[in-house]
Length: 371
Ligand SMILES: NC(=O)C1=CN([C@@H]2O[C@H](COP(=O)(O)OP(=O)(O)OC[C@H]3O[C@@H](n4cnc5c(N)ncnc54)[C@H](O)[C@@H]3O)[C@@H](O)[C@H]2O)C=CC1
Ligand SMILES: CC(C)CC(=O)C(=O)O
Ligand SMILES: [Mg+2]
Figure 1 (cartoon, protein in one colour):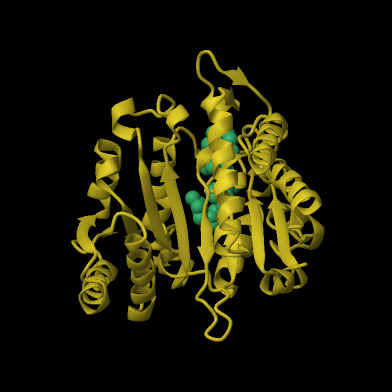
Figure 2 (figure 1 turned 180 degrees about the vertical axis):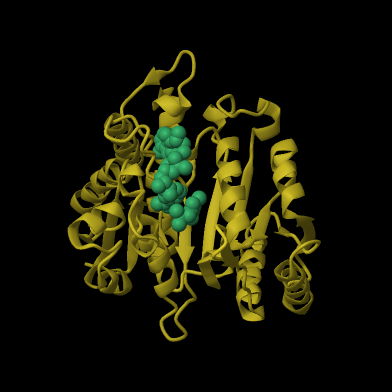
């Protein structure tokens, strides 16, 4: 039997609550489908800081590097607001992304038919929505140096964050976006701000050159990122694949999440480059949402973003395509039955807890295997 190693980092707030629902699926697949998942759990974020004063330990970092895939919940919360910047909970996630070289973050925003009325936009604008945001994840202003706060000595301080991109970083993320577009509707919109940022000038230049050199069969358009945000809520279905930098991708994907009804619906996959010999790639799967301190500990969080992230793991790390399809269909089936967590609740539906939503999805997944 194949052994598939999964390193699980539930993190803080609603992270562990959502991850518990993925554990149920893993247990089901191991017992009933010989999936062979071998799991190990580690600490990240505030929980790691509390245990050993760092947002992730070197030991857990090594385990993440060695695993076939990492499943990540969420980090952060007001409890750690006062800790040093370098060891704040979010630093654990940034270290994982950087050290594992997870440069490509895929954030699909799909409107499930049953949720068309849950969006803050008019139903006709989002019905059938299926867009993919490809966010550059290891460069840009989250990592660029210098990154400082300096005391100017006159009662003023100066904060500096640096947006830095090299040609190769833009080339490789553009390549990922064009390749994925070929498997979808064959269209890429690149977003930056070349009107005010040098990094935007280079971004546009390199994306255009990559397109001309290798992907001229794909339709390429460019949009300033602020206008892109406006177009995402004006007419989201105009987009197929959006490729953008780390900061704009972070913001635009939260916007896209609300198109689908809730931040609790949006999964993501963070991928490294395929190994030249084996073709395997480092990967981490995480929901787009954070630790949601406002609802943590109440058993009401929506686990779908985390479960759908696991579906992406089945697809991208283990080529378990039929299982991934079945899991995504199971989510759809449960929503069609009117089962809802509070964030996506609608009239005539049944409101359930995090755990009940997880159970319903496991049951729908199991039923699809017996059909
Ligand atoms: N990947 C990660 O670990 C991320 C961590 N964060 C951290 O999370 C903490 C909270 O940040 P916020 O800005 O409040 O963003 P957030 O994404 O945690 O929450 C924003 C809003 O969405 C709701 N929400 C999020 N996920 C939900 C779910 N699964 N089900 C139902 N409702 C959900 C929350 O209740 C809240 O009202 C901060 O410390 C932040 O740095 C933020 C984003 C990503
Ligand atoms: C480091 C993260 C907390 C930044 C973020 O919001 C995200 O990646 O979605
Ligand atoms: Mg974010």
